[in-house]
Amino acid sequence: MRTCTFLALLLSLFMTQGTNAQVRMCRVCKKSITTCPYKGNHPKAAQPAKSSRPEARNKPAAKSTPTATEIKTFTVNGVAFKMVKVQGGTYRMGATPEQENPSEIEKPVHNVTLSSFYIGQTEVTQALWKAVMGSVNSHFEGANLPVELVSWDQCQEFITKLNNLTGKHFRMPTEAEWEFAARGGNKSRHYQYSGSNNLKDVAWVKDNSNQTTHPVGTKRPNELGIYDMSGNVCEWVSNCVYSYTSESQTNPQGPSTEHPNFGGHLRRGGGYVSAPIRCKVSYRKNETSHGRDIGLRLAMDD
Image (cartoon, rainbow, N blue to C red):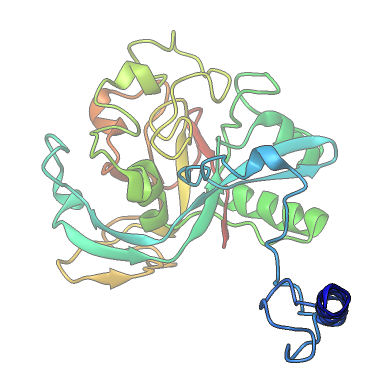
């Protein structure tokens, strides 16, 4: 009897071990290998890619910064000069309220819309003029002084030669472009002068120039980073003088022929011998010849 009982227990233990040895379990779904749909070989779940720079994972996103004024640099015969981009926009041209004691030729105020363009960061220097023309005939001599004693026609000849040398299309600014840039473009703070209501901060004029021109870019720039749009030398613009109207305008070119009542082309900005009223951003005056206080500033299309 004892022998039979022992044999029965031994047989039961053998069968249990045999069953456990045969039943393998899937570690993922906890089913037997035979009932697991993947037979124990489940596909691995996609893992997020690890950064090769662990420190960057918790780094906050960089803050966006305002876009700086775009500047292009050009070089001709070893002389470099810079052009500042003026983003297009709409402004009030003429005798706006901050422009004190306006003349009738500055009226009426009217809306002007302009496309983007480039304008010289400084007035054309004697160094640049000489690099293009071969010589310079200014009253005051100095490579970084603004060229002066140049007529409107001489400036056109200079620009033609400059374009031939560079393959670019420089030109004079229109009067509307000049005033928009002088006012600070879309960044305008509505100053009376270009960059300030304190003229001496931004300009060489009658009261502080010692009756001579000064190196360009030595006073404070305006809102666009442009220098000397008030003072140092007056600047020719492309068009002849004309009377304003109250009608809105888009990219006005102004007349190319002289007005029967106002001869000559327009000059803007005032010079080193100018009184403050002539240095306002709205001030305009016709000129028929050249003078010791007249130079130019370049422009080009965007």
